[in-house]
Length: 124
Image (cartoon, rainbow, N blue to C red; front, side, top):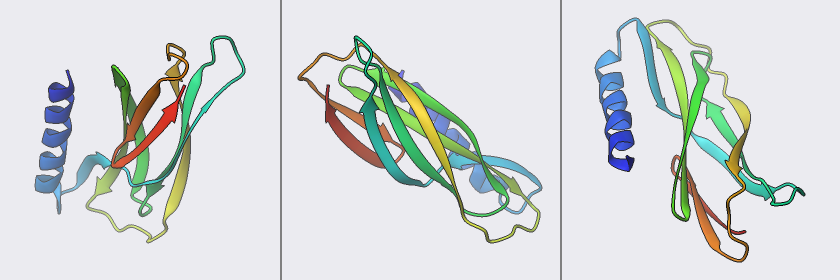
């Protein structure tokens, strides 16, 4: 499954290269500025990751996120969509996301969360 998601993301990035200069849309991984993992006070605790991603100009907007967990590693992809072919204001903006990770974490065990190119670890 990890290979399939990687192939899909790689295909999207390759297609975005060919779309440069054409009118349309392309998707890409968002730049990540901050990642914070936290748990609420429920029993069992529910875990979340707060992410701050970037939108490099006015033609780029947050599109979606995907979460995949395998063992002790959770991967999160934050995807932006960009309008290609128009003029864009050079205004950098930030988007806050609170993404649920679930509640099936074993207390005392180390876990890893990868958000695009940022990796964080936590102990449940």
